[in-house]
Image (cartoon, rainbow, N blue to C red):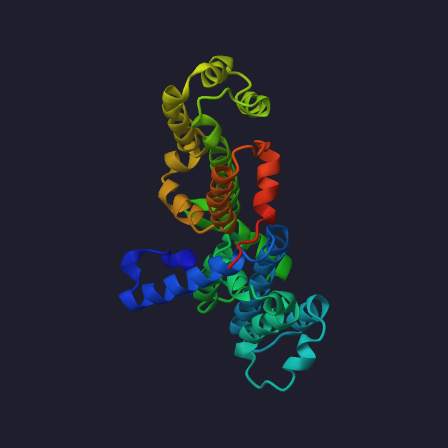
Length: 310
């Protein structure tokens, strides 16, 4: 399914389809929190390369009506052993599908063995680079069916063009991905900051330092954060939250793809993880009020290591 073309909108799915998707999401989220983020992210960032290779293979075979030598050479270089396993298949049009199955079994066997393969595939297909590849593949399928290119692009060229393909209001998948990373990091900062803004105590020195680092030219604003009491700090926190949309996402807002971006933010695996960790962290602070307030770097590292106990 192409999430790039059709989006993930309520009007596009039946009640039964949304129920199935909700079940899949719950399973993926549960698995996501049972593996350290660094391990999951390595696989998550690798997954789009294989999806891209499979889609390029499908596009080339559809255009040629066969499996050309250039495709065989590329597959032999990038996934040795696959062609030998695929030799018995008499359906070249299914080669791309078989490649993904082979990749999940060979490259991501550890994810299956450790119980988080569903999370990898659920979030992998929603990776912005996968969305870009799907959108570009659909364009190639449409255009090449009537006018195949004189010279088919190499995988490297095809994948680079796919990463520049428009996803949201003229923005490439790389531009959207960069905006999402920036916004999610800001959300993590707000989650980390919130407990220090809901007490009558002075802000810890490392919290003040982090504010000064993020607002180097606005000492007046930082001083207001330091001096205000608990009741008056709440509006400041709301201002900080609005800052992300008003400034960090200004380009997306002006170009008309802010809603498209925020839709994808909500299903980003790092955001799912930091929101879950924030709930855990706040409960721990309530149980043990003498816990030292971590630096933002320490907080992110702890969120990455966090494993939810069933």
